[in-house]
Image (tube, rainbow, N blue to C red):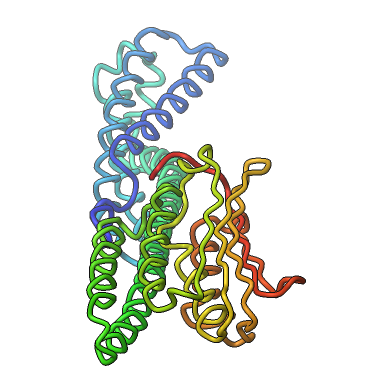
Length: 370
């Protein structure tokens, strides 16, 4: 099941929003203070103190704007843009009123001369015009922050979509691996039960009992593992030995097996039952369709960080293109290697010059995770 807990945490996080607000107001306050110092206003200390109060009020107002914009995070982008630039207007007006109060109403004597105070007190028109002019400038300031918020929100949404897509891709790959792994077992069971039925019909009870015990051991070992996890090559070889023991009951005179795997590679990790379709094909096409003795060889070699596994037989018959390229045979192995290792997982197969058939798997040597 995919975890959708992130879906409820949309938009910009409070921490990022707070840092952006503080950064905006810090830059604005520093810029205004520098302008006042260059112009050479009187009472620089008093101006700086009141400017800090206005900045604190601005931070609170912008935070409230952030909380308002969060309510639109689930709406279409056009609605969010309209909301951002519309809500910035009343908040800018509130900031202009606060600024006017701090610099023109609260103790103006400290800041202005008598002439300047008389000019400011000349009428309501001057007050309204001054507030509106300041509101317009602050509207562009808050609109700039709102634009930043939309950009951060969009980036957060894009990142969240990427994470969700990655989770879905992992889930799909896991489902594919499970499907490919479990395709092997029913096919093998079908063939084995047919063989077992044949032994029972021929009254070969001892051989049937031996096949049942081998089959039980095989499934007890193979089904205990997680299909998404790798297994040591030693365990994979052991499973194939169990499988060949079952088939040896069917072909006691015709089947010979050789296992050639160095001890140094026994701990290498391989996908579980990756050799099963190869050995099964060798039995199906190399042993069951000929009356001559057949030797099946399972070999492993390490070279430049790659593990090369081969399954060969010297039977007379060979699988056709349709047998080797579809269903649960070689195509199954190819798909599992591609899903697990990408381009580094390769399979090559074909007839041998001296007769029989050969399949070679190449995959990276790993010793962790199994």
